[in-house]
Image (cartoon, rainbow, N blue to C red):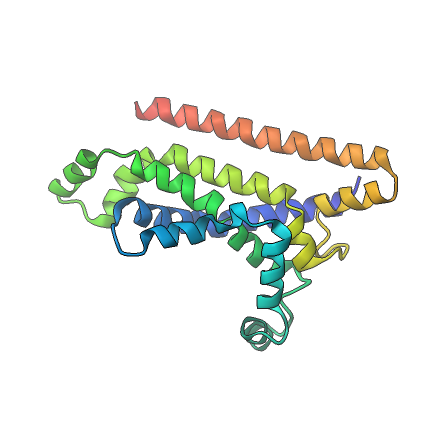
Length: 222
């Protein structure tokens, strides 16, 4: 069992969730409530990682993050290191690749809030911020929980993007999915089976806890 790879995967998933939580709230809310030109194009761009193969998406990110690219040069000047083949690069790539898993469920959660509820909050003199915190977030909770669970679970098992952006550097970019692949390539089926079982158990536990929390909060709000 490669515990270092598992710990790295958990860190990557956690950082991705932490970064995408506020993004999912504000982007999902904006897409749910606002009507603007090119909205369909924006939603299509958000959904793009779902239809592109991870290797294709990873290739474009690899080019965009390369040392000679504007993003790569900015990162080197600002932080003194390269973005590709680093844990930071994995985090940035994971955030971009998981945008649809974070934003779309949150958008559906906000869309499920009746217009009358938001109008009532405005009639009571609530500001937009107070309405978001006191009214909308509690009601959109199931969508937000779904977004974060999907983001965490998807990041935990992601293979193509990790391999393209990070490679397989032990302790730096070698996640549990890469470790399982390496063990299969080495015909070490027993180690691959153990790591796969651990990954399955963590994913199942995450989904179960999310459903439990969503149901408990739903009963409390009803």
